[in-house]
Length: 311
Image (tube, rainbow, N blue to C red; front, top):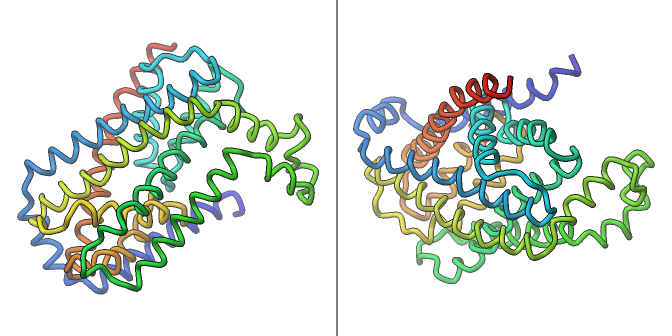
């Protein structure tokens, strides 16, 4: 039972979140929105999401080059696409990361592989926080004032915590209270190895990863906007998406199936300032989720091909 407790929790949170969100949305409104989709904009969103996979693979490459590891961009792109496939079916938005770690561990030590995957994720999230703070002064006049400080708080705390992890000295200095198995100073302990790998990329490589993240996060806001276009929601400005997407991204941390249910539950509040009724906000979030899962299907034939090739 304990073995499956995590999965049960994630599925339960997703179901509760969806029931809560859909209780505020007439189902005929939801069905009507999907029936009148602009499929051209859906296709544009799909292409942007696929390009985003290659961009994140290139970000990972920048980090691995900092560690002087010889893994090709093609290999990393394959792993990102395959990882995205597993995200489609595993009850977590981070399941694909585990697959990436296991696969790339064939080319390097496992702790280094895990460290680079963490930094890869972290640089993208930190850049989102930074872009949200930069966009806040340009927020629309109708931006909900009750969201201002949560966005600032999440972004600032996220930036501080992320850079503390990347820098590492504070964790080592104040990590003495941790149990011996979680030691951050004993180089033989897994957590210490992981921390060394996180920091081992070097600031030059991390800086390059941040630059790639800036482009990717800008693209992330664009595909939310093109998804809005597909639903006829063309009045939401690009800046608005930059401000609310960090909170939507952080919601992926909540145990759920790829953030499903959690994002839909908070979407009405986040997009209220853009004048979206609850039904349209939930529909927007659901369409992003469905399109992301559609891109995940590209990983199925690629995974089968890599299994045949490697055999």
